[in-house]
Length: 127
Image 1 (spheres, rainbow, N blue to C red):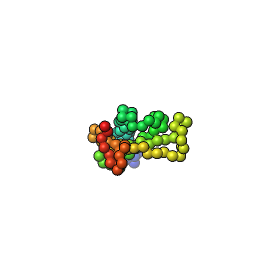
Image 2 (spheres, rainbow, N blue to C red; image 1 turned 90 degrees about the vertical axis):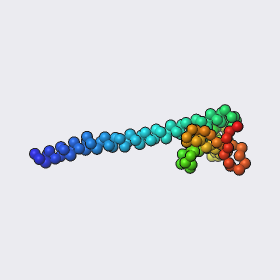
Image 3 (cartoon, helix red, strand yellow; image 1 turned 180 degrees about the vertical axis):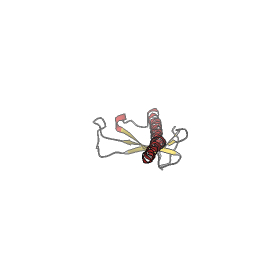
Image 4 (spheres, rainbow, N blue to C red; image 1 turned 120 degrees about the vertical axis):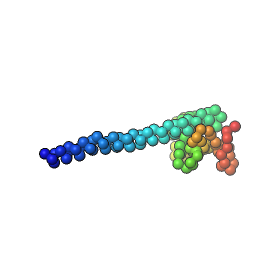
């Protein structure tokens, strides 16, 4: 009987004490992924809106890709804006994707800097 009680106690311990810890870690991982996706969405949307507002490209929306990078810079997200030719609307070589310009998006307030029209690659405010 004592052996069965020990097994029961061990099972109880695993089920009621360890599972909440595992669930908590899984919840934190999901929360981190969602936070990352939200940051990416906000940064790319800010760049998309700037491209439209300042007429930075005459290309159709189907012909533009936004590449998000949150690793290269500790103060900014980097969003590269490039031409893609994967649609019949875009016309061009589908094997070529030209980098048009890039943006630095502040991690603090999502303000923007761009290297559009920069001859030396230095980022500047939009005018």
